[in-house]
Image 1 (cartoon, rainbow, N blue to C red):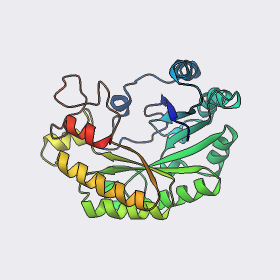
Image 2 (image 1 turned 45 degrees about the vertical axis):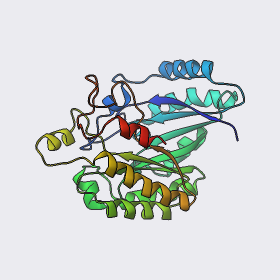
Image 3 (image 1 turned 180 degrees about the vertical axis):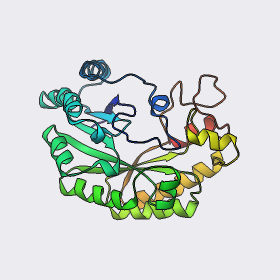
Image 4 (image 1 turned 60 degrees about the horizontal axis):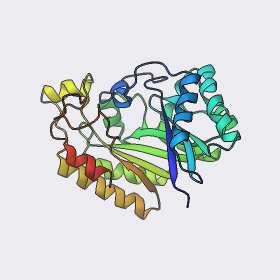
Length: 271
């Protein structure tokens, strides 16, 4: 099997209709400006310079809600990416989006430009927890979107979070069971990080939210990882990518607030 390389294109908060209590896409992605087709081309070219030959290469649009962007902007970005697929310099394209921003018209557009994988930010299948976090969608939206994505021949991915406000270990195991029934090919697990300039930061500082300890986060991720693996579903990541901004709170540049999340979680979550 060829080694897989990802070319990440971050579109922070583009197309996203609301602010979830835990989210600050600009901090998570490290980007604040609007992405242009020139940015996409330059990013792809820079990554292609360092990739080895005979490897699987995928362009991935992360952040925000890709299918919520105005259609013209989606096409502008996808056209650039698709040229590299057609020229066989890149193997595939993936996008991340919200469950309530999937419909037949949007899927036809993605299919037109060679998108292979669609990841849905599910976070939880408990509607009470989704409402508590101000996600703006329900589990019913997740089910509907997942079935449509698979019906139109895309690879389905799910993203879920560990340690959301009022979420228990049982809630998260139930989420894993619910998602497995929808037959995703891949899953990402994200323990909650308290990020600066979010509503969750205010709740944390007011004593209304207590993050998981490192041990709790690792144990919960481990159990869910084994569950998905048993179901033949690949867990492709545990924890956000560590960057200059998303790192241990002991680092003065870090956008992470909660001091219970330390360097050891980055190590554990990436095993």
